[in-house]
Image 1 (cartoon, rainbow over the protein chains, first blue to last red):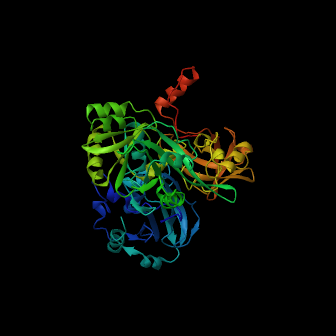
Image 2 (tube, one colour; image 1 turned 90 degrees about the vertical axis):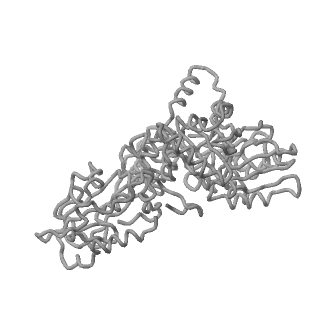
Amino acid sequence: MRYDPGTPAVTGAGTCGETGSGLVFFPEEYVMATDLKFAKTHEWVRPESDGVATVGISSYAVEALTDLVFMQLPAVGKRVKAGESFGEIESVKAVSDLYAPVSGEVVEVNTALPGKLETLGQDPYGAGWVVRIKADNPAELDNLLDQGAYEALVRSQPH
Amino acid sequence: MVDFAGWLMPVQYASIVEEHLATRQSAGLFDVSHMGRLVVGGPQAIEWLESLLTRRVAGIEVGRVRYTLVTGDADGRTVVLDDALVSRDTDAADGTPRAGLVVNASNRERVVAWLKSRLPAAGVTLTDRTFETAMIAVQGPLAVEIVGGLCSAADADRIAGLGNYRATSAVVAGHPAAVSRTGYTGEDGVELVVDAAAATPVWEAIHAAGGPLGLRSCGLGARDTLRLEAGMPLYGHELREGTDPFAIGLDLAVNLDGRSFPGADHLAALRNQPTGRVRVGLRLDSKRSAREGDAVMRGEQTVGVVTSGSFAPAVGTAVAMAMVDRDVSTAGSRLEAVVRDTRLPAVVSPLPFYRKESHKKESHRREHGRKDSEQRERPQA
C-alpha cells in the first residue's frame, strides 16, 4: 500500500500509542511461518498449492492505518499487474491503494471483508485475506521480501 | 508522527475515532503548542491592534477573547493572512495594556513579519512567546471539571464560571496558567498557556486526573475531525488568502462598523455584493469520504470543490465542507462528490454537523424568547 499523495501519512502511529501494547508485527502462530512473502507496499502473499497466490494486508499496515472505514475490491476475473493498484482501503485519515504483488487474474475475492473490516486486524493472515490471484508467472514471487526482510523494513520505518 | 509547520506532531495517539468520541463524551487532551502565541504591549497596544484586526479590540474588557481575521491588502483586494484569537489580557505591572494573539502555526512567521512591518516607532511592543510557552487544550463535557480539580477551590470556581471566549489566570497542578474558555472542537473546554518547562507536568497531571473519567490524549487527526463536525473553518482549507469571509460564513468575524483596517474597503464591497461560491456542509451518507480537492457535481456540471472531508465519528457518516455555486447551496440540495472514479451522493446540510447538548438547549432557549447573554464567538456556519 502507498499513501495517497497529498494526504498526511500515518506513519507507525501505533508505536506511540497510549495503551503501551506496541505493535504486534506477527501473530505468534506465524512467527515460524516460512510460506509468507511480503511486498514493500505491505501486502502479504501466500503461494497456495494450486498455483494461486492469496493476498492480504500485513498486520503492521493494518495497525498503522487504524480506524478503517471503507474498502474497495476488484471483481473476480479482473486482470491485475504487479505493482499496480487493484483496490483501495480508507481509514478516517487517509486513502491507501492496495497493490498487486504479482501479475495475474483475480480468481476469488473476500467479499465479506468490506462489511467487516475489523477482520483485517483480528486475523490479518487468515480470515482477513483480501483476494486470490492466479499468477501469470509464479517466478514473480521471488521478487518479494521474505518475512525477515519485511520485518527489517518495518522496523526501519520512521515512527 | 508528522511534520506540521515544522512541529513534530502525532496524527493520533491510538485511534482517531476513539480520541474523537472521548472528546465528545468525556474529554480530550491536545498539545496545541504549535499554535503561535504573541503578546502585544505598550501604551498604544490596543489602539494599534484595533487598526489591524477585523474585530473590535478597543474598549473590550480585560479577560475577553475574540475570534478575528488578520488582514492585509494588495492592489485594493483583501488578503486574509490568518484567523486568530485576540485576547485583552491583564495590564502589565506598569499599568500599560496588554493583548494576546493566538495564530496558526503555518502562518506564524508571516503574521509576525506583517505585524512587525506595521509597528509604530514607539508605544507598542510585539513579542513572540511561542517557544517560551506551551499550550494545552482540554476539551469535552468533563474538561472544566478535570482542570478545576487540579486548582484551588477559588481558581476552580472562577474557571467554572468563565463564559465562552473569556479568559482568566489560575494555578493548574501547581503551575501558573492562562486559562481561556475556548477551543476548536465544538465542545465546552479550556485552553491553557503555561511556561514551556511546565508543559510536561501539567499535561501529565491532567492526563492522570482525567484518565479515570475517560479523558484521552488526542492527536491532529481527531483535532481535524472534531473541528470538521463542528463546522469550523481551517486556514489553508476553507480559509485562504483570497477568501471572501462572508462567503464562508465568517460574517461575525468582520466588524466594519465605523472601523478602518487593512482590506476593510474591499470587505465592505464584498459584503454589499455577494459573489462567487459559498461554503456549505455536505452529508454523504457513506463511510467513504470525499477529500479536499474532490469535485462537486450536479448532473454533468461541476458546481464546487471539497475543502475538507472525513468520516465524522459522532455523526456516523462521512461529511465534508465545500465551496459551491450559490444556486446549489441551499440545504437539501442534492449534489454528488467525485471520489476517485465514483460519484457519491452528497446532500447540502446545515453547519455545524454536530452540536453539543448545551448548545441545543441554548438554541431552544433562544427560540423561546429568553435572552442568551453569551454570544458564541467563533462563527460556525
